[in-house]
Image (tube, rainbow, N blue to C red; front, side):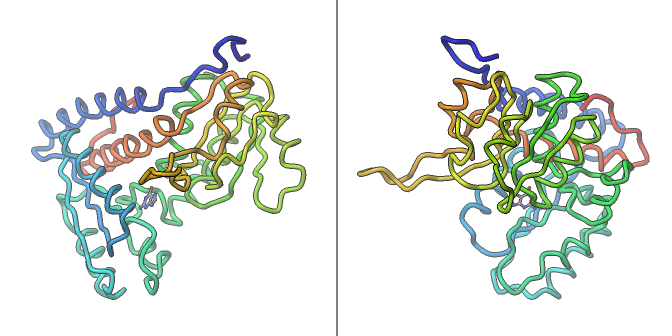
Length: 302
Ligand code: GUN
């Protein structure tokens, strides 16, 4: 239940991600010692999308900081599908590369599904390949998309056992909503997936002990939709239009934070909640890929 004075507890994803990155750094150093090479992540960026450039830069820096090798491939926006497929094929066979990430969205004219399908599923640290989606849906070991796995880590850290809890996932994307729902079901929660055609969304959210908002609509989820004491995970990162005189607008989530905080038991802020978890989990997945690639058991508890 929310504290009357201060509201919900803040789930500090930034601090959690820092801890995870430190543990990964130790495990990556152990790996390098045993395997004689660092875990390696190849990041491919096609075109000049400004947000993608920032993300790709951040991923490369995080790799190096964790003692992993980062291989960046920046290609022009007019790169042909054949050229991109041939790079992916080369990375599939490169023994220094344990993980491959092709930054999305790709420029118009490149078929994202065809590119993802070309990545070796055992190097697909994004968990986007249909083989990994299939593995998740039938409970086999595989790579799980970074953002929902990061949300799950925060939820388990906060709540422990999720058995029997009512969860609503707002959003049904392949990258967040669907894998998130699968992870929650696997953790024995009772899950509703809501989306743009859902009727009576506020009523559905009001029944939920866990709310995952992943729609990309600024402050859509209102405080009076939240069940008192619920745990709210806000995946949205939306930039509002600049206020008068400002160059940049404020970053907000999909949840009206101040309103929801007054009712919820715990809530992730934006920024500093789910966002930092995504890169930390990418490093985790790359470390696991490196162990499998080298025929070693992946370290426990990451
Ligand atoms: N674009 C936005 N988020 C992601 C992500 O997690 N992985 C990739 N490959 N592209 C993205």
